[in-house]
Length: 303
Image (cartoon, rainbow, N blue to C red; front, side, top):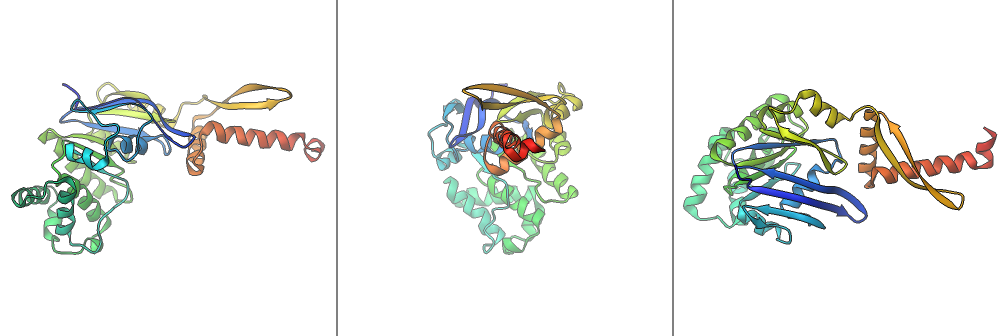
C-alpha cells in the first residue's frame, strides 16, 4: 500500500540540542503506527515536525505527495492532518458542543451540515460526550476530557491522526476504552501515529511499531515481525549500551573516551539530559570534567 505520510531523514534541533537525528517514518491509510521510546527520545519533536509546530532543519516530510516543510500548522491541518498534543487542552468555560465546533472553525470546515454530521459521528465514538454536550468542558472527568480532545480532532475529518500520550493520567480501564476507539478509526481508512506510555495497549492496536532512542529509530517493523523481547530490548536498552563522552582536555591535546554503561543507567542519563535540555554526551562530558577537576585538586589528591 502506498504511504500517505513519508518522513525522510528529518533533523530537529532546539538551539544546539538535536532532538531528532536523520529520522525516516511512514504511515499508511487504515493503519496505526506506534512510536515508542523513553522520555527525551524525540517522539514528541517528531510529531511536532509533522504537524508544522517546529520546522526541521533537514530532511523531507510529504503528505499525499505534498511537501509539508515550510508550511504553517493551520495549512497542514487543512490538508487533513490532526494533531492531539500531550495534555488535555480543552476550553474549560465552553460547553462540550462548543469545544467541538471550535475545531471546525480552525480547520475551515464550519459549514452547518458538515458540522452536524461530524458531531453525530464523534458522539457515536464517544457516547458520554453526547450525554454531556451542554455541560462545561472544565467539569468533565480526566478521561472524558481526553475523549473530548480526540473528538475535537476528529471533527476535522482528518486523513492522518497524530496522538501524543492520549492515556496520560488515565485509569487503565479508561485507557483501553480510548484506544479501542482509536483502533476503530482504522476501519474508515484513517492513518494514525500513536505515542503512548501504555506500551502493551499501544501495541495491541498497532499494525507497525518504531522504537526511538536519542533521536533515532533503532527498531521498526510490523507487529507480526517484531518480538516482544526485541521491542523491550530496544525500548529499555541493552546491557552494555555504549555512551561516548565528548572530547575532554588532556594536557595540550584531546582524547575521546568511551564508557560501557548498563541499559538502565542509559535510560536514567537520557531522563536527566532531557530535564536539563542538553544532549546525553554533553551531560556525561560535564560530569566527567567535574570529576577530573575534583580528583586533580589538592583536596582530591589527599583522598
